[in-house]
Amino acid sequence: MQRIIAATLFLLAIATGASAAEASLRAFPTGPLNAFPLDSVRGVQSLMLHNVAVINTTNAPVTVATLEFELLRGGEPVERRTLGSADLARLSAGGAGLQQAGMVEAVAFQFGDVLGKPAAKLSTTATLAPGEGLLVTSQVLSFSGQREAVRVTARGADGAIVARLSIPVIVAQPPARYRFPLKGGFYVQAGPSLNTHHRWAVPEEFALDIGQIGTGGHTFRTDGRRFADYWVYGLPVLAAADGEVVKVVDVYGEDESLIRKAGESQQAYYERIVTAQNTRMAAEGAEVLAGNAVVVRHAWGEYSVYGHLRPGSVKVRVGQAVKAGDVLAAVGSSGSSTEPHLHFHICDGPSALNCVGKPATFSNVENPMALLPGPIQSGDIVETN
Image (cartoon, rainbow, N blue to C red; front, side, top):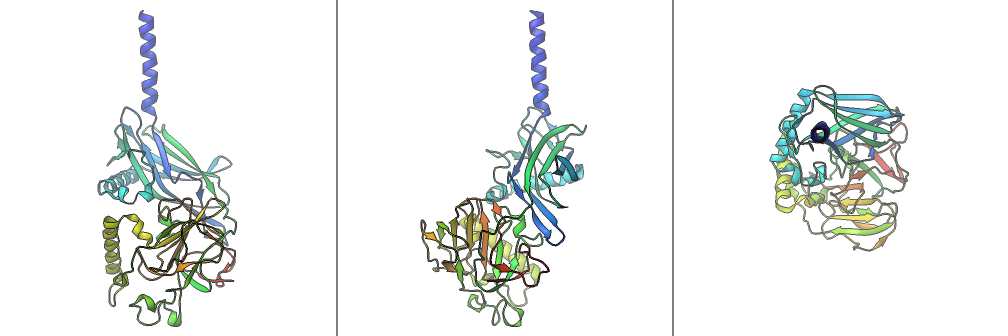
């Protein structure tokens, strides 16, 4: 009897020890993750890890002392970034603050299910009680050459692995399946470059905000106080590839008060726009950000999204088949838009926001000011053919 009791206690000790030593490491998006060139000529790439979370799924406290990000080639680490205790303390407090303010829920499209369902409570420190989590966002890695995965490792104070996760990486740009959704010459106000807002948001990581520059180097004809003054306003929006319309939104108006006012400082304008955006999201939900929109499904499992469309301009209906070049609507400034432009991106689902963005390559675009062909970056002037 004593041997049986001793054996039972030994097995319980093994089980308890194993549980206490393990946690869960999650990411959103789950991957594969697409790299995007920082410099196409020199082959320098960038990779964005939007969300990584350590969840304490054990029955005892877990302390994360370091979080390592390693880019792998041939299964071996080539680059490594390590977040230490000071970094994790700052990130813990920031993530917990976001959750307490309701932002994780308000912009759920940005975080997906990285915290699990129901969502784990985020700890204010890197010591996680059972059921608590640590959220790390917006980690950017750069490299040259080929990489096949990024490995994330959480370690305790003794260096032991608390949790580990590997996410596949795709470096090559996709085939040219799409045509540019406008015809003529255009200015890409914001693209997938890191110096503009798209790259930092999951659904629009590889999106384009497309405007047009006219006389005097401005995007507008006169003083820019009215949407009709803008060169791009009202231009036909074209289907980027053959497909089926799966979503149409044409319920939002346009607000010219969102245009920057004469004499308004850049900082004051930014603060005003952020406040207006947050107010609208709280009142109408996150879908208002895209404004009037059309979503088209394509045969290879991707969806093209056309946003900020002019009210009443949508010419297609859900279920309608479209060909590349068909007119879908007109460029407008509905939703969260500071001036008329077309927002275009590719996603993995039938939504403007609740999806993961994918890079797009166009068959009919040239950047005449670039040294060599390459993906479109923020600030590029492009021409279609």
